[in-house]
Image 1: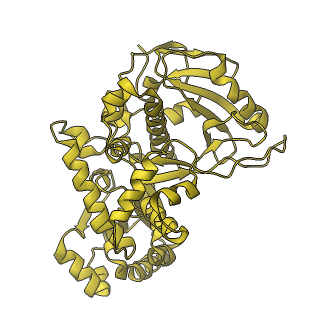
Image 2 (image 1 turned 120 degrees about the horizontal axis):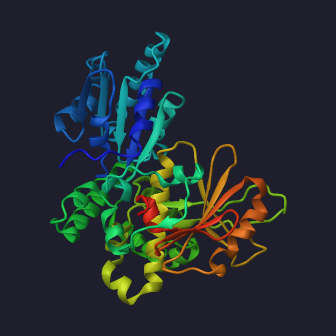
Image 3 (image 1 turned 60 degrees about the vertical axis):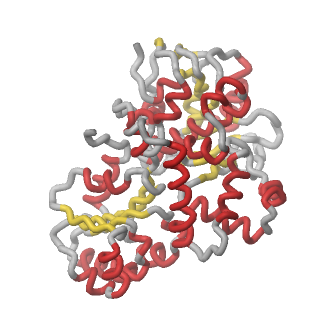
Length: 420
């Protein structure tokens, strides 16, 4: 199959040409290596992967020699760099030498399946010398080949009333996943996810920390899967899993560092109404299909017989689509809105630009909406004032329509589709 372009592609190409080095991280098997090898740059590439035992042995046992033999006139793509932390200080020396010669474009494009902030040696060595980008599994617009970034369209006010196709929400969520199983639909997903989780627990987690019993992390994931799309009560999870505070925080941090889960903070900025906000974060799984596997639930069965649980699944899917789109645009903040004084008036997502412009997004698993569905947006708008630019209710209907001066009902198909 032909190469599938990613939303992050342009941003990555710009960083490679303007920053001393770039670290592209993200979940294992989300397409980092493929993306790195398919960007457009005005020079040749030299690709090395530390999945190759010989290359890894060389890097770990003679890091200075490994760095010295890399070509200076090429973009050196080094895959799974977290496996050789011995290299990090030599990267620093080489980057500093290159910067003194006033050549800003990257000599190294590093990729890894671990969050850089979970690797202090790498973060400390390359602080100020490296741009960090995060790649997610396929977005629905990427796998469908439309190239739409719906968050960018929203900030550009690219909204016109119109009709969209009827959503097959189960198929949509199933398609927005890891490249290997998104492209090859004949693969047995149950077996693929079993192997994936085994690799994460037996290899990646052990790279990040010395864990004697990785099965306990899987049990934590099972417990967290039941809370996806909701406020995370850490105390309840600890009681359910039997983990003490220190172990729980360590294991949860490892799950985040391996990009299995992510948490969104509560919006809590100064505001003219002096509102206070809850402190709890909302929990999501980075891939909704992986979430279903950990839950040991069939997506079609849930959609048919358990709409309440599927509603959380749908919100998880929208959360991942927001993150995929937002991360490809640079410095956007994503949070959730939940004021203490207005219980029950929460808004699922708030997306903010560095200049303060904000969009609120509510998610509803239904083909129709009414005034109750956008009532919470008025509280968000009142709180944020002029910073509030747009309120969106994502639903499974077919009509893109304006329901207020700054509020729109948006079919989920807007995430990738042009109107009919």
